[in-house]
View 1 (cartoon, rainbow, N blue to C red):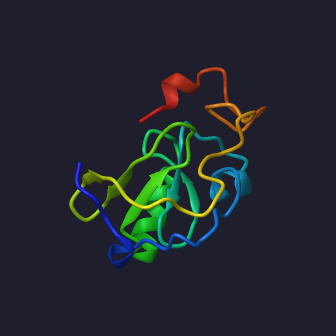
View 2 (view 1 turned 45 degrees about the horizontal axis):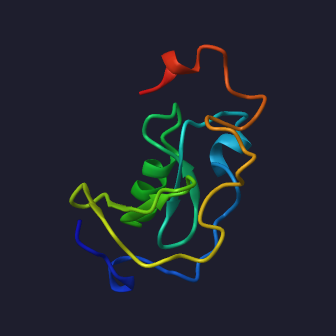
Length: 118
């Protein structure tokens, strides 16, 4: 895995937009895993989630890089070439709260959630 830098769409000072997918929280939705926009800090849900909000954010804004917002995951993904990369540490926090369930948020995940994954 090669590296990416600030010149490729990363702002290491941008704080996360919250602790969960912004759109899912607004729409009473749920997510499987969380992704963080490396440029502005927007937290969206992964492409396995029903809403696929991280990709929708990238398409709407042109922000090309995401990173995981899951504990113990340290990678970047570039939508332009669909490749994984290493990159700089971003402003904390680097993952959602440890007491937040995956999938989440608590109380919104349907019993048949595995059947709803993409």
